[in-house]
Amino acid sequence: MNYDGDIDLRFFARDFIRTHGGAVEDQGLAMDAVLPEELADELSVSEYLNLQFGTGGEGEGEIHYGSPLLEKMVTVARDRIPVTSCSLRFDYLKTAGFDRLIQERFHFRNGVGKVGKTAPTLSEYILLHCSYLAQSDEQKEGLLTLVYNRDTFVEVSTMADGLAGVEMDFADEATPVGLSEKEIKRIEKLVQNNAKTALAVELKDFEASMNRRYRRDVKNLNEYYTALRQEMEKNLKRSGLSERLISDRKEKIELIPAELAAKTDDLFKKYSIRINLKLGGAMLLKCPVVKIFFKVSVGRKKKTITLQYNPVMKSIEPLQCRQCSNDTFKPFFGENMKILCPQCG
Ligand SMILES: [Zn+2]
View (spheres, rainbow, N blue to C red):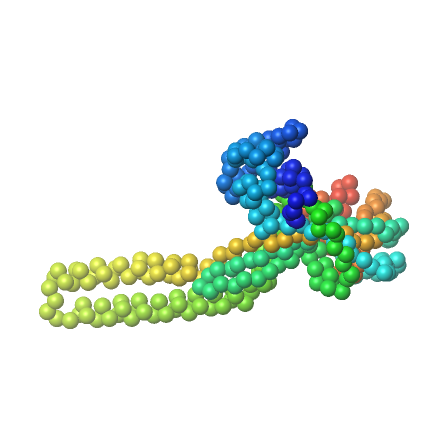
């Protein structure tokens, strides 16, 4: 998000609070705002704020250039969701051959379909850069890029790979772009799921290495305690030990399994992987696409579904299950021709 003297402070403050999950009631001269706890903590203000603009006062809800609240908001906006907007240009947009592409990509588990009308149009995508830090005995840092269709919310992250070869026009940075609270909530949920899958791939070697070390250390630990136990048992058989010493040593031997279990547990903690994922930036992509009206029939029932050709991916985007909202390329048409993924139907 850009911030300079030309941007209306009111607009910035309102948009900032809304995009960070708060609510704002605009009353002309002042605004009442309710902030989520986390945001209030970050800004060091109360969860309920009466925002005053440009009065030069000292209150905690005072917003003017140089006021502590505004400074903090700008810092949070800068390191959290700087949204830039960008239009993708294509000199040529595919007009035919969609039937073949659809047959290659999709598996219709019941019913058959064929392409009806097609229509070139514009679609919006939300691209998110997330940085992650995986911490275990060692640590690994990296970046993930996730892309979502802004209308359907299907995940199209492979679009990010294709962007290098596409002409991109960046919008004037003075135009702030905000995502709605609803969109942010929806995206947060999707990111959690998709990041887990994407990170599993990214961290495969790291995880394997930590597992290897864990197994190696557990093996060494077991060997150590087995040897220790044998040694102690051998010593017990020596002659001339007092009753007291024998019972002391027996007690120590009995404690070995508990000690081994505690040490193994420590190793498990040492090699567990904790992941911290941070959103590093977002971009709104406007992209020419082709909407494909695809006529599906299951027995006598008919339905026209909309598919979308994405020229960056050079492919068709997935459908979304109407039950669980997961993406699917293997739709089943249930009751009332409702689209279902393999898990739901
Ligand atoms: Zn489903």
